[in-house]
Image (cartoon, rainbow, N blue to C red; front, side):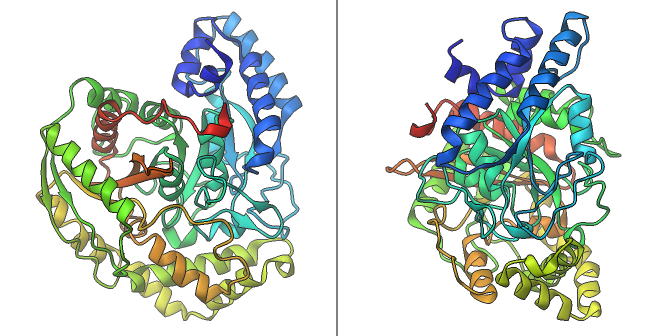
Length: 465
């Protein structure tokens, strides 16, 4: 296999190649170290690389394979978002305000290592993971490999840019109001936010007042499914079988589904012409595949009242927890101040209202298997769109850019970003699939069917050769 093809092969195929002895873990690590050194200066996706450690772990993985050891990701490199603890490394969270090394791996990192994965390094985020673009005063601008004049999204923008550019096969991500799905949308990747509690957030018990979910971004649905088989918990009432099996059903024997589709949003934000075209083409594709698709309106209600208190309080709690709060950016300090000023009763009310919001939004899914919406309201943001802007201006602006994702952090149910083609200029488009509570299996199957019908993973950014 050509080196570039190997870089873009994805973690499932790379694991197969290592098991078959066709490639060694050291070859993979050296390949990605070379690509990071050569390509990442154009993107600024990776904050720190653990080169010596990764090479040593690659040799250990090779020895385990030679001894007959079987692990799902044995010898496969991955990157970790810089909001997630890696033992001995500072979890910077996009800021200069933190300088204390983590004492131990986060639970998701521990599970990845247990499956044999090699942690190659950590990826950039906006300060305290609060924005759908990845720019910070401390760590600079992260760029989209499909169009370096645009953002890769956020807050998992470094992870998405790295995977899209073939700097790694998969990277961890997290999602408090869309931060897995938005970067996936911007970078032509698959990004699944699962059921709340599906993947542990430990060592943190509650993040952003319960809004945050943990996951990954990958080029293919099967790669995400394999990651999930390694790190996700099974919950009471889950269907039998693995997540990879759920994805493979979509490729070989997909179910016929009743799909609701909607373009309305809680903020009445206009939908860009390009995104509407990607949405409508997906509707047509789903119908051609035999699914029943019905136009609906989502009953969002007072979504801002449910979201904003939890979002702002979460930022305030994160700001209070850093080692040096005075080093935070001015805009971040303003966001944290708003979160501190919110009455506790208002935050508690938003938490209590979650069940009613979930019940209202899920009425649609009583008669439908999946809800289809646009991914974002517009194309990936131009670099620097909010540079120098204040907290309220930025908050209002990005809300109108990402009006489709936050509802499902409130309800806690699965939602995924699926590529929906490209503009004439090669900028990625995407749609969002929303599933019933705890029904990630249907989303994986449907997304895998779409991937077969309209492949996206074989297209690569020009700078990534």
